Image (cartoon, rainbow, N blue to C red):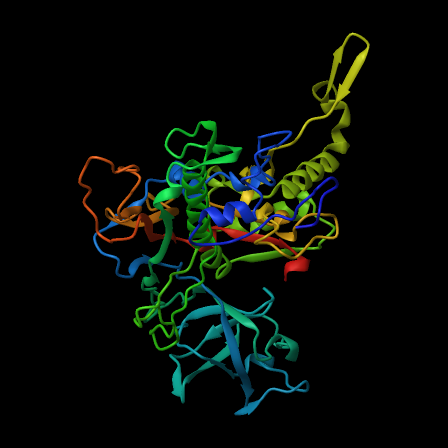
Length: 494
């Protein structure tokens, strides 16, 4: 950390076992001080709203019986585009001189799958070139070959070369048949469900406390938050600060795991990482990776606009969500919240006269102008609500800086569809029943429940004068349909 003006000593850092010598080395046993209150730098960041608590407000966690991998099913719509592999005229690949389909002549289209049937009318990128499938496809290696001709009343019409090059997408329009004695109709396409699979992640922390540190006062006072009541208090006991710091770091690591964890399963389905025990180490995909695997959008680093954001929302909604279900939550850092508000303010300048009475307040001769936009109602039923995500403001985890100031991650927007999919929450925590927060004390000669030990017989598990505090979390997150969410990033993070 950069030295501050009037700073006399550099902060000392250590991990694990804490002894009296540590306090002396950190200048925390100095008896004479002008102020005995410690000011916690970056306190706001350290007391961030727990991600797990937020997720619990939008959906009840799913509890499973074991910590095995968990699966769920998704199904895509049956309609889709099929990329063209090749087009042929008279058995040869088309060229710029070809006039495929002229004078009702037959030509061939080659696709990688038998998606179309005879009597189907299909088209490529332009509606004016409608193509009739003349027969069921014939296999050719891994591809399928279709005989076709143009549906037209103009015998001079043909398909331009650039409309039937490899990669052009084709789709089915309908199944057209003749008026007299038609023999068969088009068939139905089906799409099977596919499985999504994620794994539990496991977090474990521990800390050793010497017996003579259990009730030891320090030369300073700390402001800590009670993990059970949420209330703050001042304390000069090292153990109070240690308990608070252990809980804070545990919650931070748990939030990081649920959000940032990246699945480490290899292509062969195994896990190559090993733990301290020698057994395989596995972790599942966090919320970030699950959404990024489906949708990521980038905006110019210094040019964010509400119009662009609405366009992204429409891409996410059209043909997927009815207009009365297009309600999204944007979780972003403080810089992103300012950017969002400024973008709406820029947008609203077209309607300044409508807003001025709401944004200007008067007290005597003093006028106040201002306000922050946190909600936006756009066209086609789109509603956006912005929420603060303190994790994105952390300068330790997020190291890339934005040219406008602060971590670039603070300008990232997690657009979460926190509604339901088939009646079930789209985003939720997943726990193994009874294992979401495992705690234990390994008692020595003195422990937090018997800090003095005089005149009584303590039950010990180790002979050490002290105790070890253990805590473990087994869980993960499930984004049931990640295509309904998107991570929006400034281009600097591409």
